[in-house]
Length: 235
Length: 256
Picture 1 (cartoon, each protein chain N blue to C red):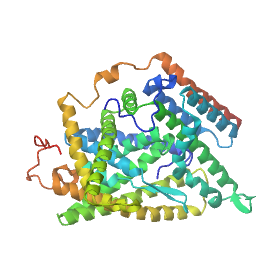
Picture 2: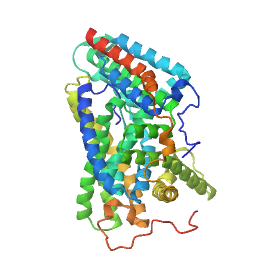
Picture 3: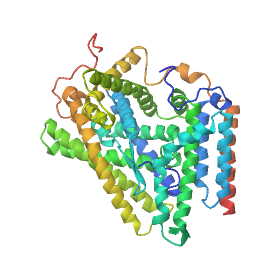
Picture 4: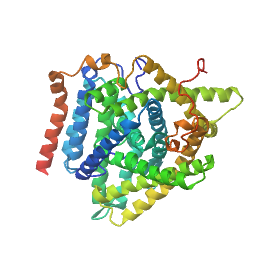
């Protein structure tokens, strides 16, 4: 999913960079309000987790694209959409600057696809499904699975849209083929991502429901586990 | 996060490039990449010029070509897309080794390979000469919002926590009779991924509380920021690379 330098032409990359910058500024403004003592370490850990998980790359030789887990849904569930988008964006920035994953000049495109589109699609679904599904761990698991699956496919279609707007090589009628391959491959990745997201979120929700951002509104009266670990609590 | 938290790509040295302040290097690297991407793909000589520029900086930073090229293989999955283009592109076709390849597709593949590789080499040079700590100080000095540098600091700090917890859990599994081989290690890992996350969080939370009780306010102490902010001379020295690159790009645009 990381777009490397030269795949999309300059003007389109510049437009998306401006778009991503505007959206991230908004996220920074909203995220500042969210980022309290409990969310700050969680945001860091979510970012570290996504960073580690994105290292697993599946090259798909037949299509000539690479795919990997994205983590947008996990971030949206655990730290909310604003900080979540920032977490994914930070991962992408560090990867581009230091590891050369995805071109620096294409950062706007990558942030739009993975941090903005992915997280937004996931959070909309989370908000909807948590309202509709039963308020059990199974309901939460289904929510996490479906939102992760859909967010990955949506992000992959973001690439197709960008390629249609500013791809450096005209694929002609093969654009539909590109869209199909990307969707198919990312459906498979999405299943893996959905399973990991669901396991992680349900485990956290069982032990520390206060840490799951998406569940905050649900049980205002529930006793909150103190954030400070008991003395001598070190393992 | 003092010494000992340098990342795997960092090459310890005291070369002139290592000693440049991080914000200068980040800016130079980003501008260089933008210049490369803005170059028209038919200007083959321009990319040779950029490659020479990268080689010069690598020599100055005492980063060996073997290390650089070996690490650059990381981009392979990302540029695989390039190899499909000559087959799927439209327009004129040429015969190469019995295969009908699209000319436009070949140009596109060259475009992605050249620009992608130069971008990866530039970021590897930044990584080889800058510790993660300096990277965050650099972003902070470049007026990056504090929320972002805070998340980035914790991300880099917690990567170690995450890896450490994963290792401890693996040791715990193995010492209880689990004997994983090759891919089957994944099963045990996948089953414990939720627990791993929780354990890493609780450890990370203690790290965070320890930082708070030592006066952390969301920004790294002034000791980090104060000393060593870039001087005008350092900006000028680092500017040579993007200025040369921009000149090449402008000439290439004018000529083609």
